[in-house]
Image (cartoon, rainbow, N blue to C red; front, side):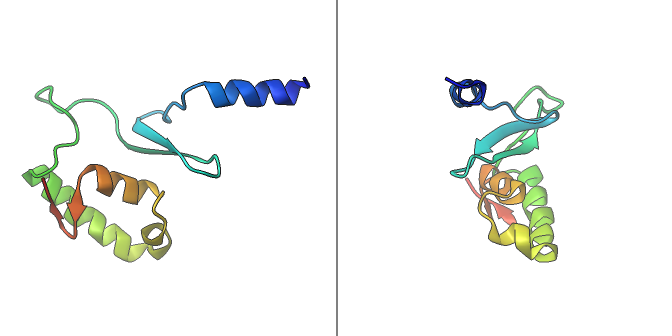
Length: 97
């Protein structure tokens, strides 16, 4: 085996870790790593992402505006914007259960 083949095998077998400050990572079919979501916990110790809450509604409304401003990210299902909206369970400007 060549060194590049060994490196490729190691990369396939290790879990992808998100970039600093990000909570999750998705590896696309083409092998691209997409990190998204804010890392850490909320002030009260609960999960950072809380769908179907006022905080979720505020995020969904804000990110809906971002989708209007950047059509390229809006069309890409693996963009950090769309992955985060999916995690927040956004439907339009509201966060659903």
